[in-house]
Amino acid sequence: MAKRPEMTKHRGFPSGMPGHGHHFTIRRANEKGVTPLKPLQRLARPNSIEAKVDAAFLHALWHHFGAEPFERGNLDAGRLNLLFGREVVPGESPFDPASYEALLQIDERVARKSFPESFEDVFEV
Image 1: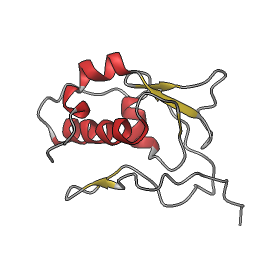
Image 2 (image 1 turned 120 degrees about the vertical axis):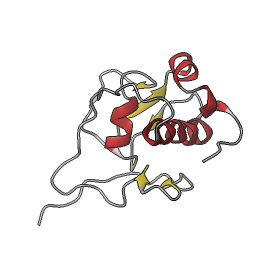
Image 3 (image 1 turned 90 degrees about the vertical axis):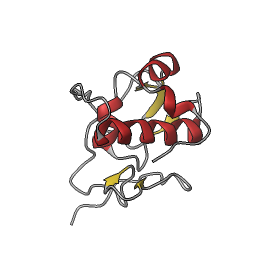
């Protein structure tokens, strides 16, 4: 069996959106290799549950890390990929999209425009 890569677990970060089955974190590193980060297209979906989940995830990122760069760690790649390249950008150069240690950062200007509700103190689920 392959040895699992090391992965920072962000203690105190919500594991997902309550009552919806959408995950924000993973429990353990992928023994087959790290899922690379890449921008995924978001379809126009105002007022959908997917848009609400993206906003909730960004809310959690902002209130946990703020404007500072943060390590990818156990943050879910699928959820990150929906924000990656827009609201969440590489926080270092060179950037390794297939590393749990890669640094990311919120592009506050873009994020506030896309999901203004994510910057409120309380996010209504």
